[in-house]
Image (cartoon, rainbow, N blue to C red; front, side, top):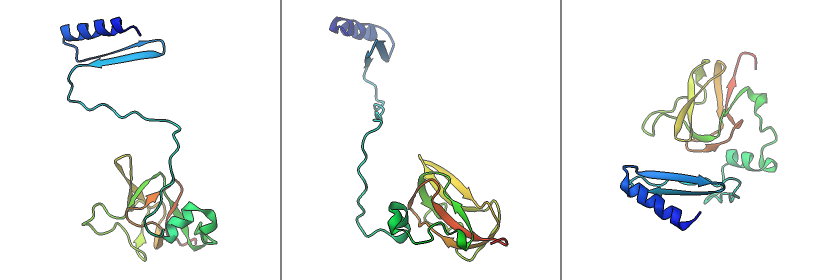
Length: 162
């Protein structure tokens, strides 16, 4: 894009009441804005390599079982112990609505279909995860603040059928 065109755009911007202008010519583009207090939006880089996180302390058993299959216990699906409720999304597991509140559920508790078991935060949205069966909660497989993956087992519920 010719520098004279850019200068002309700046002059037009100053003369008008427009706060920002963006022009595309083929594969080239220019955006000009005047003294805005709005911070620029972050640019997303697609397909950029992401380094593997290095834990500061030894990982817990539940974390290891999701990092490397060879570190997982022999029966990592827990289906032999009851109905498994997996994570429906990637996010952060929270056992209670806030740090001061008691957890939604605890081991040994009877849960009913539709009871809230936890919250998973994904993209700053809090998603309540509900029981899809009724029964006795026999295992909680994630800890408060854990990062969880899609399909990762979170709870094991002993039902009448199991």
